[in-house]
Image (cartoon, rainbow, N blue to C red; front, side, top):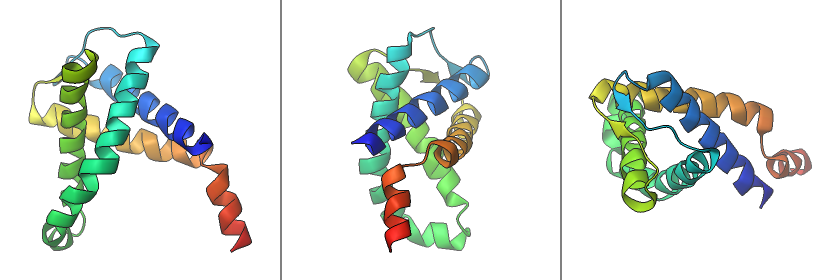
Length: 132
């Protein structure tokens, strides 16, 4: 259960960073309270858990052909979809105005997520690795 909350916090902070950096440069977002980012982090987590594996499976030949660079476009799509679903479902969201806004927003989310995962990694996985 702790891993779920850690991942939710990481997603929320990563989305906050992407929206704060890119707001006005391809992304339009109204000011939100902290719980708006938590809702967006939850939506982003669900999209990444459900939709992303299906898209990766369907585009596996393209991922191999481009040596993994196609995953950047998949991340762009996940970022765009999260903003759209956030506005549609919960009323918390952001509008992606350009492709490059979604691309750099997805890139920022990926980088911030990796960095935070290193520092806030799931302790259960670390313990499991040590016992194996």
